[in-house]
Image 1 (cartoon, rainbow, N blue to C red):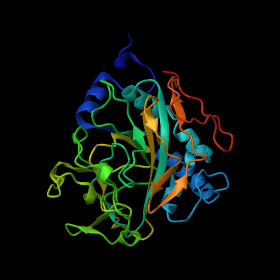
Image 2 (image 1 turned 60 degrees about the vertical axis):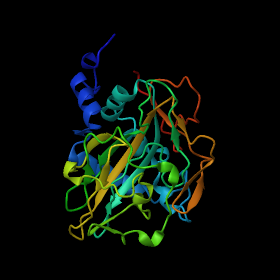
Image 3 (image 1 turned 45 degrees about the vertical axis):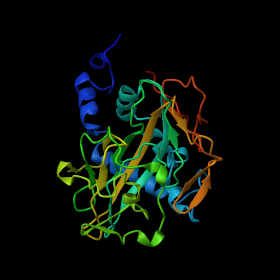
Amino acid sequence: MTTASERTGFHLSDAELQQWERDGYLGPFKVFEPEEMTERWNTIRRQLPDRSLAVYPEGGKAGSISNYDRHLDIDLLSEHILRAEIVDRVASILGPDVLCWRSEFFPKFPGDEGTDWHQAATFAHASGVPQIVWPQEEDRPTFGGTVTAWTAFSHSTKENGCLQLMPGTHKEMNYDESKGMEYDAEARNNTEKDGIKRGFFGYDYRQLQKDPNWRPDESKAFPLVMKPGECVLFWSTLMHASLPHTGGKKDYRMGFASRFVPTKVRIYPDTDEIMEYGGGISLEHYGAVLVSGEDTYGHNRLVTESRRGYRFTPRSA
């Protein structure tokens, strides 16, 4: 049997896997040189307004969902989710058979609030309905969740709202996602917590707390400053947040998150639309992407090429 330390490519070493198990995150590591990332982002940015082949319509009550899954229609993003620097590391964690089930942009502009501390195991936090479900097996993580690859498409600094992580908090959920949250569009950028502008995209994540008197221990947290082209992996169940944007008017932060699960996980089970942000959007054109190995379960609808013809070729284990 080949050990992690004997694998080639960007697979994790045994020491890195031990760090992952302990801390719940790894990185940042380089996917692109800063100059290349800036060039790629400038191209992607010009392509974003063309939604002719996007899988979700723009606007409406659930308009914020429209930034999901643009890897299904923008080729540079299609390529991004298959990058060896990301997929090899994710496969080291989840096993050889891996799906990308979602991607989304995380912009932060001058004056934007920070994102409140949160965890996600089933991504049911908005609707109360799980979007991913792990099988009940002995080897499943007790906390469920997804591996998130968060890539800085621009500089991510303390001033423009970089990520914050709380190492070692990924194995115990402090929130009950089945409760759901009330969406309030007016609350966005108008929420304060302990004197800091912090919300959750129109929601108040504190509504999900198992113990309403519990407070995150921010002394355990650190800010994750990243250069363009750097990426960090973390369990979605790791306590994470972001700082408010307090920087200059011409500065903004753009992050791109791609989310991965093993093929045995069920994605959007028994549902035909995403319910978030006060509305719903059809999953008619949605499909997960096999980025590594093979799918022997057949639980989920898969797409083998982007809507512009980019072939999704999974990496071999």
